[in-house]
Amino acid sequence: MKYEGVLTKMRTEIKDVVQYYLIWENDFINMNQLINKKISLNFLRYQCLNCGLEKKIYRQGFCYDCFSSIPQAGDWVINPELSKAHLDQEDRDLEFEKRAQLTPHVVYLANSSDVKVGVTRRNQIPTRWIDQGAHEAIEIVEVPNRYLAGITEVALKDHVSDKTNWRKMLTNDILDLNLEEEREKLKEFIPEEAKEYYLANNKETEIKFPVLEFPEKVKSLNLVKNPFYEGVLKGIKGQYLIFNDGTVFNIRGNEGLVVELNVLV
Image (cartoon, rainbow, N blue to C red; front, side, top):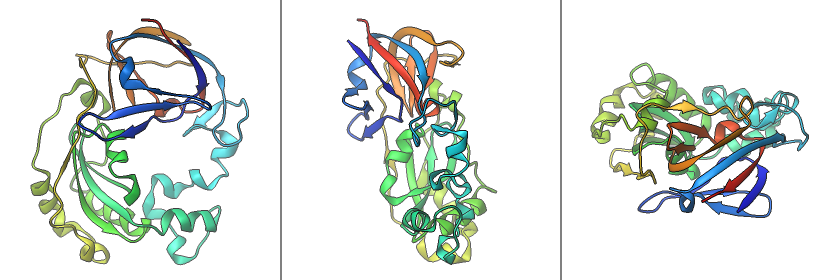
């Protein structure tokens, strides 16, 4: 069975075990059905997710020109504290920025490798947690715009990490923690502007990933430098495919690559 298309991050569905879907232009694959099967990946070319041209991908699936100009790649995306739409100030496209920024956002704790703090839109929960490979997560505050979420995250990351150790996450070197207790420890550090939005009663969400076998050590597949790879898929966690030889492939980190995927066994 052969598929060809441009990579975009896998769609997910939270059930007893997370379901993953790789979406092509005219088809899709339930990736859970490929676990324990041999598959191959072959890099063919680039295709920018914005302009659609065959140009080298710079970041987030975009070529350099698009990344430098489109509102979807503004600095506020990575650094939400830089959001300015609530002040009616434009970065690249005020209409787009208002739609994206002036909507409910959540600051949360997620446990992927260690506990980390993060920000996402309300409608991206639990998708954001799944993408980060978190086996447990909980909301801290729900605020009406991205700026308030951003300044809350900045305040809290003085006391808890805002990074995921992807190697620990993929080797399953993790601890189960009481995130309600961890949230309570951080309550006093929430900025005054966001204190009224504290969520005191939310329970933590537990997430199970479709992994048959975790590697002892991981090696990341760079499909541009090594354009062909073949292996037995042993699991999926976060946006990573995990193979039998310890190779891992980050689908989201390779958005904009056109690949051929073959199911061999």
